[in-house]
Image (cartoon, rainbow, N blue to C red; front, side, top):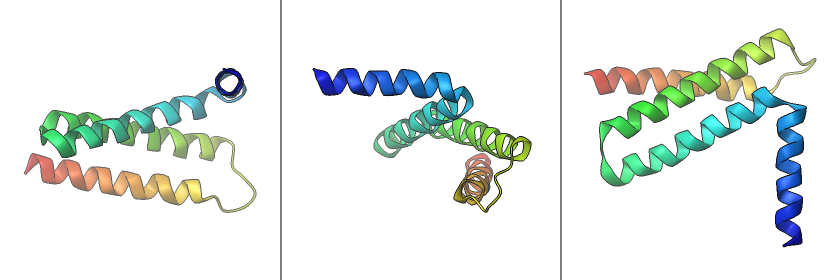
Length: 96
């Protein structure tokens, strides 16, 4: 039971320390779960919702990094841009 209490305390502390990053983490986790459901069921609703979560969290990451830039290059910028490109391309393929 002790590891679960430590995990819960860490989760609560991280939500209080940096709430936007926690929301981004939740959105990306939900997107991964929905992509997994989509790969099993192949229903386009799961794909659309997961892509929406990915786009929202990527924009949130880019805006957060733009407002409070880090002094050196972050892999976060590249990952967010890559996710945006893939998501927009997937939406275009889904519409077609």
